[in-house]
Length: 213
Image 1 (cartoon, rainbow, N blue to C red):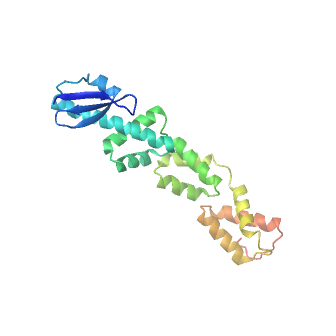
Image 2: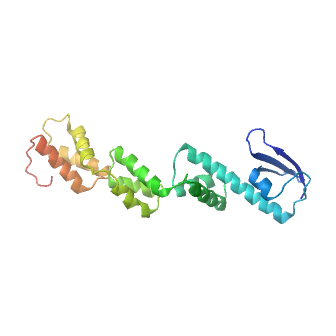
């Protein structure tokens, strides 16, 4: 098919607009211009045209991936899902993710650490962190290392217990049960919760006969 015109984009540097005899248009980069030796008036065989379209689609997916990751970090699974939702083919989405990994803009191991630190700083426990790592598609192979790098939860738990009980002069069993349930929902394990409540009781000289806490 004849390439009728080839003009540089007025909006994006390094991008070209190709118009073919059938009226179809392609947005190209300098990469496709060089790889396919393009010029206006060129008769592009159908097989080469399909390759050109595929290359242009891959370049478009790369640009879109870069724009998405510039806003905030994502896991590879999240990025590919976002790209396909915006109309990229699964193959182009995967190729774009490969390219972002190659450049260092996409790193599931670093993302696992970032997510773990973020949710730990917000006062969430290991179970909640694991839930978020799973929900965001981070491979399980990175979970343990990310969690091991977190500080021990004692300080965070003590602060949460204090905050929940500070307006109660003499908390009773029901109050401690509410606190323990709230901390469990935040993803903390029972042994850590129990230890935090015991520390609170000792510090505030709260006597409690029930050995559950």
